[in-house]
Length: 420
Image (cartoon, rainbow, N blue to C red):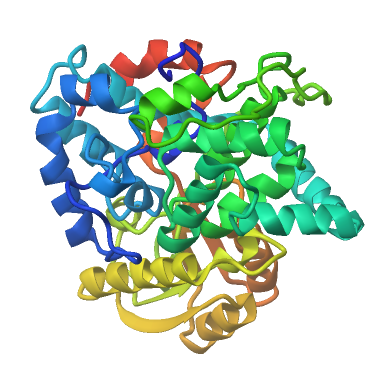
């Protein structure tokens, strides 16, 4: 929850930070992820609980861990972070940070059981972009360029474009101003974030924007208040002219949920290749599901599928570097190297040339990577090559609890972390 008792919307991105100001393009490596965790760990208890809402970019956002891009690509995993934190603090002492990590799993599980919400967002975004008149295009361009005249909003837009990061509390304020003060389509704002956030995640991002708008929890929206912004930016901003009295947006109720997905069991005795995607770059659990090691490996990158518009070079570069780091770390255990590509046909041709009978990969949640795997599965079937999606135990345990709101989900956190 945020300071006002409302669910903070980008918890799935796990809003966090290093001690000093970040570079424009942080290292996309597991080594960096572990270093950030080590620096933050002493502050994961009371310090985080009391200071996490403060947006202080000039100080390097010192009160949050900034692990989110690494968790998003699983260069480091939820289990690892939670085990480290709970090895130092009790669950009660680190409750706020533990919940922060678990928000990401909650959002993913919620969307997995209601994938039509992602499809609707993509369809509505296309309609917004295709149907935008000159006035709307100009206003969208001004908002993304940080030229609205609202000083805090413009500063956050500039920080996002320059660094690929925005503090969680600022994301809420920004989205509220975008929707209710600037009266811009929420779908275009969600797309702006997804194209520029290093931790951009289809579930957390889409559902977070829906929550601010009043669509996710229907009738309950989030309105940015000038006094709140002034307090948690420590007087850096005191915006005027913000809309602080507006009705939530209206839309259809979320669809009925389907059962949470389950992973596949790889077949034994087949010549197997490992396929990495940007969704999960810690493949130990996939290898443990195999009787024999893979003979070859490749990577299918789907970052361009985040948006019909061009994705930030920072985002594309971070994603590719993260994949390269994972392939380098695991190269001794995953067979000969293959292509790193965004082309399904390239992966299929490589699998055929290697004589593979099966590709195994981590289960990819709803989003571009999952869509790419669906296309790949259909293509591989023509060559009688199986595609097996192995689900991580954490996801299998957490996602089925995302049936309603987070408050019901969090009742299960003690049992989720009990084995860590």
